[in-house]
Length: 376
Length: 211
Image 1: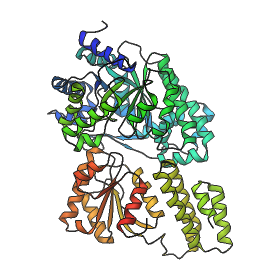
Image 2: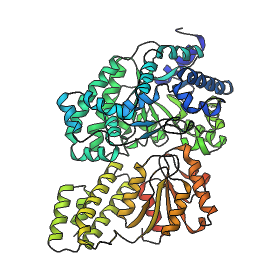
Image 3: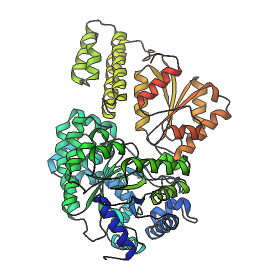
Image 4: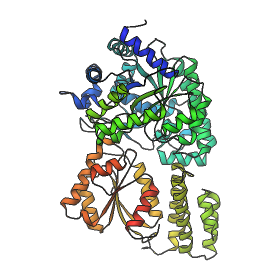
């Protein structure tokens, strides 16, 4: 036993699922913005800005679901310091509830061209991104939000993780790593960045090579406590349906692969958060060590095909689509989950909402995911 | 002719521009060159639908098309010339949603296919869609939405058309990452476009053009 009986039991279930040795599907909660929707007396804005209040709201909500259908683990926990994490990862302004958005409207990325044409040369010349980020960040985030981010992932982090442990919930993602392709795409804006990828591919690659050093340092500094299970490695603009094979082979996959390999070397499971459709290149994930990764998809990648191609090489996590959580019926959700499990099997499968459950998800639909997993 | 279409499909910017400039200088009709480019865009849309081209290719081709048609061809045509007369489409991202990338891609491919696009931007209140349809007598409305929390805005927009008494006069197609047939049913729209090319094909069908 490493922590407490409930946590340890679930922790071993999670670990055995990553190793594709589990017998039962792992019921996984994902819904960062949902809890205040179903909690009286707290707006989404308060939930996001007050991390103590927000964390309690998050845990109460998960506990409430868990009383009705067992939850084995949490994919991504309470989004404390979220504004800072997203801003730093995407070099984009995040419009927040209670500030630029109404108090109960979900945060949104405002994508503008923050990275100037000349910034690539600055990064290449200085061999780091310091000057560029020093110019961009004050334009897209205020110091208070940045402080909140550093505080949450610094001083508060261990206490937050211990809170999950006490409640008995392993949290799969204990950090967030954004490949350079995604960061540049956010900072440059998608249209301009994609054009850069056609017109100056070699230069972008050289810039990404420099940015990758920052990711290596981030990975080296990740904590190593037993509750650290995995780390989010994001991919959305670099999805297979988004970019052609040359761009993917040159600017997307090498960096995702290295990030995953470095995490594995540190004993941390890379949780490849794959938004959009990755069908074309799903086989490439077999280049990573067997039974060491989780592919977390959002309903657009064909998990049946992924299981067929990858077999027992990788655990899969997904993928009840957000639109179903919002507008479908409870029975439709259960049917979706059952059919998915019939086809891909429970071994190496974490069942959860695709990407992230929207704040307006129906409560009964979220519950239906966990009920279906429990009944299976 | 044919080479221009080929170069556009290959996304060969340098040779495409060279060839268009050369043909214009040699007196080839700008209308013919434009038509060739539009055929190229159509083929790119088909390849995209088949999974043989990707979003980045679509964006690159859209930029090339804009560059060639706007900077090279249009100056040779009359001041009031449009890229085509396929029909009018009112387009916008629904209220409370500020995402514009998907909408902009649809705008580009619709324009390339000869549609006049009335783009209302992002975070568009339902009454603005109604006003635009009335003002421009458009028969198709494209609603973009990237947030599940904004499905209500789609529904409200559809309802606003009903309240204005013009719902039966128009077709409403919705699109965006989390949009599918479930959202069509929920909102009372007519169709959804999984890709930008789906929207082009739908508009052609509704407005009586050949697909």
